[in-house]
Image (cartoon, rainbow over all chains, first blue to last red; front, side, top):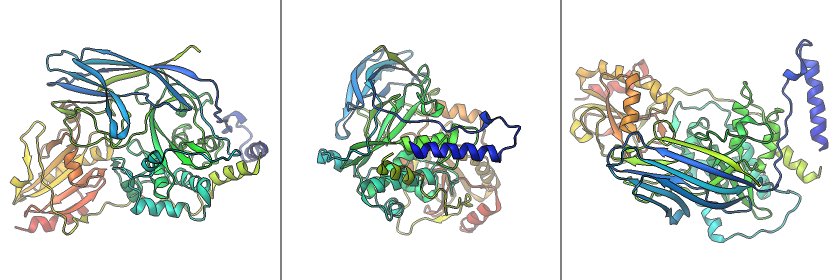
Length: 370
Length: 176
């Protein structure tokens, strides 16, 4: 790639001139590489173990499943064990999402549930030079354009998206503009010190686009939908390190609690469903180096900024694409914005899914031999 | 590299940071409760204390603070709410901290490190109360007057022991 090589030469040349001579060149930021390509399938087995310490009355647990079958993932089956009186697959059929449900009566000493799932996954990418015409089920596209509880597509969401895409021609340029908007604007300090519930409208109103409380890919998806580009979040789990050496884009398979990650995809008529992940660009910018990188053209950030527009690395598994999920059998009246973490409740209330220590669960993965 | 890919790459870099000033965090300010919007009900179980029903609190100024222990700005703000409750206890002001969807165990663990003397903790176990009160950011504080009607809300962390907050609350305290 000629312009990449010329940029590298320019950066190195500039750095040599600008930096004091006693600093070794290896301390300077090196441009890295991030270019997932469709390759062979990789098999993984994931194990989720839930133990309920605060057992009061009967306890109900719901676990997400890697249940997406596409050109980048194939499910090979699920098995489960435990001391629950009920263990079965249930579904929120309206949202097209299945999950493992377990119910433990009051008499069980330490409720325990283990879910083992096997699947294959691979990287995905798009060849921008090969335009075609791709069809999709109109019902799927309607769902990928509809607002959800936390992703409205009117008001400030649409206003912001229209501003971001002003001057953009066609679906690809609009998507580019929205992706760039998310990467650029999440650097700002929030106007309000608080934690969002994931509501995109509130994130945009308060400028609170950072931290674990926000889902930046939800902002991208909501804005895309608001200007007529079908888009959806894909909720899943990192299962292995990145082959490109980016620490923040991988996980340690031995301990995957906290490795949940939501990606995104958009439907472009000329290309079909295309992978997107501006949230991971921001993660690299925020956490890959000791300094917070503010410039997407930084040599560490640039390859990821480029690569995650159209590509995903196959070190992650997809659970589902559902929003506003009902948990069958739950005593709660509301819906979940998404199902990506183990969920549980007992007489005392709902377990904190974001705290794997208080709601005790572990997740691990192992790669299966080819 | 073909021209289409080059355009895509350049499009992603965009005008790097051009014209985008980073606004400072704004000082929190009260927003009047929307006219015509009824004050929701609130009746919730207590954590380590009696249940609370807003309907029984007529005649008091009630400061409802929606919070969660996993939210750092909520945790930072709680002590100032307790100071507020202590300062105005004899003026019939009550601070009620409405916890969002945490279990007794999680709350108990947290409260060991955050003892509060005057703040009542109640539990919104399924999040229905937060939804009813339109809470979309934690912390959000809604102040209810002695007539039982919501007067204003403050979104985000605030210093409830400070002069600004004193100014927001004073008119409600003066009302009989």
